[in-house]
Length: 156
Image (cartoon, rainbow, N blue to C red; front, side):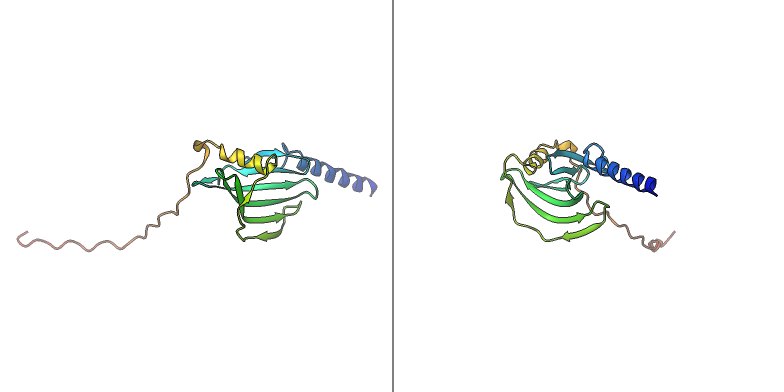
């Protein structure tokens, strides 16, 4: 019993260590690490970033303490150096959703020398060739019955 408890404790410690090490954080390759500090790490989704004068991107904020993370759909204004949250979803360390806020927030200035500023600078300097085109809704083709035959000309 003690061996099982010790093995379980070591496994939990290994998983926690793996999650706090940004190189081992379990995210798909589409998530690009921006930066980490003592409290958190910030990532953005390279596949869904959009630029139409203002950058819209999905961002993950991984909180090292408590091992929870937030998935945030956020807009960044490169000219005015501001951002606002469109959607915020909170997950616990097991990946289960624990909260959600779908209300659009007001624009806020991004303080200098913060992870927010690092995210802004990173996203504002993503080469245009790396930004995927905006997905348009697919055209739905509705099949129609065969058209009626053309009338025959008289004399044929």
